[in-house]
Structures are given as structure tokens and as C-alpha cells.
Image (tube, rainbow, N blue to C red):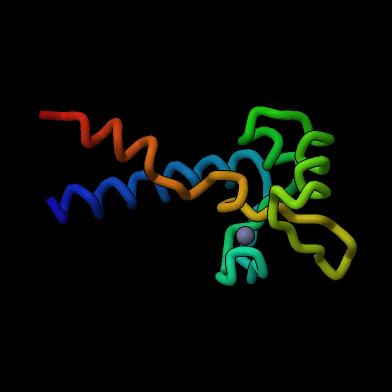
Length: 99
Ligand SMILES: [Zn+2]
């Protein structure tokens, strides 16, 4: 049981990294909202991953629905976990569905 769980997490992490390296830059920085170090991605990448438009991402940021951080050069980065990334529940359910 425990082995199956850890294997699921590793798989998801790998998939996430593949997505990020292919779609956009992502960095790990401190997120005040998560009170933890989180993977931050560009608004365009966030929109892509969430299946919405970039303006929709900005709207969510302004509504306080997404965590974000601003880099020293003024660029905005979106907190991946607040976007729903790194939440293994959906895939865990699917993998755990085996008899
Ligand atoms: Zn966050």
C-alpha cells in the first residue's frame, strides 16, 4: 500500500515537470499564500495548464483566487498549487481504482 502511494506521487511530479519544461519557465520560490516554497509559472503557462485564457488568469489573481508573486523585473508568476497543480487526488483515485 505504502509503496503504491509513493510511486503515484513520483509519477505525477515527473509529469508536472515535463509539462513545465515544455510549456514555459517555472521556478520554485516562496509563496506567501501557501506559506511554503511553491512552483511558480508564468500567467501564459498557467492559462494553458488550466485550460483558460491568460486574461482569465489575471482576473483570478485580482479576485484573490490565485496566489502570485512579482519578480524584481516586474514579471508576474502564478502559484502552481493554488491553480490546482500538484494535487494528486484525481490521478490517485484513478490509479487506486484497480481491484
Ligand atoms: Zn501558493
